[in-house]
Image 1 (cartoon, rainbow, N blue to C red):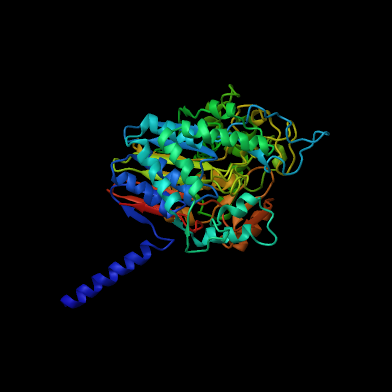
Image 2 (spheres, rainbow, N blue to C red):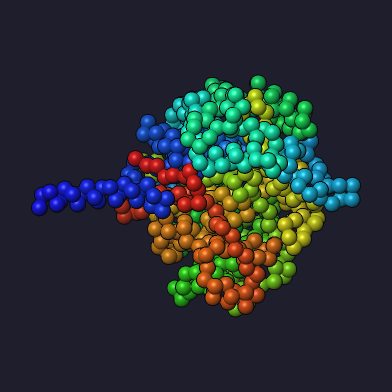
Length: 565
């Protein structure tokens, strides 16, 4: 009997180990947790928690580590948003979105006839916004960090200098960049090469000496290590020599901003989100308010009526987004209180035809996009304080350009401005005034780092990359957890849909919608379109009735991981 019991325990242990390391498993911890797009970076953040760092400290260390291990989106050459909430009910946000350079103009991507030059706002050095990541992380540390700044940056220095094992996903990127048909810039073709010119292969150690030098200056000099001195001079010189417009003045003037968190409610839960220039917080709160008007007890999850209702809710929020939202420093009269009010949501809900898709041209406006290769990290510390941080280079590997002397990639975030003032079509172009290019203006964003609270304490920490889909995947995951009481992993993995007003398409994840539902939606007037996956969510759930943190990384993230202790 004793031998049988021991064997059973061994089998149980092995099964637990196997499933806890499987991509579909949840991770449990009692003292702290980090979930990000790279398990090595998550481990870096967790080690900071073990050393007594708080959630802010761990998020900073993880973000710098992602700049080394997840270069397609992790960055010091881009920007983003941080949302923070603690056990006292205090919440705040850090806005480190990129800015338009001083030499930027509203028509900088137009030809002589006033038409957009295809690709011009996403390609070349004129597509690069003034980076905000280092300033944002530094401001977060100044205001709320507890460990020394150097301790938070040093792990990323070590990863870059000593090297990391190249993952299969990154090795495939390296091969694609150097294929015979590749049109990538030479900087990306060389990015994964060794000093002898050979391509680093899967499983080999990938060393980034020049990035390590840049990170050391940031470690030793803080924000000034990036925005002043040799790094700033090299950025400005590289821009001038290669057709860019960012100057030393742009870099020296850049400041991250602490902004009051945008808050709302869904039933008994609180929503803590990012205000503009993120559109995510406004849209998520508006959509939750609209869904709160419905009797979801009578609507089966992912049924035809449910998908229709969610799509129509999205359609309305995205139209409101384009009409009203932009950089708050340039748009002083945005009606945020109205857009996030229950009364406005009731009006929006009442004009939804439950049996027919709305024509998008009956609304007035549309939607812009962040790149699909944004990345998100969620952190909870031992005390239960939470950080939700999303940052980006815009498209995968941003502009694909950078100075070899510095070792990091520049964003192409200028593409998130409305590039053709006054012109909106039924496809991708939006021309509304709040997001027209102006010098030092922050471009509108879809990034939606969010913290859901229960009884005033952090309950769910969630966010995602995914460009135009970010808002909707975060919204649906919150709804899945709260309304349908799904475990965090299931809430992340179940089918998501996406509608953004223009183009007038209802996008759904391939093989997760039944053919009968698809046909029924098309009969109701929806144009359906399938895609491989929507979003790449990273979440932590903090149950109120258990002394545990539950984390999950989206299975679509090949190197992602939830790490706790």
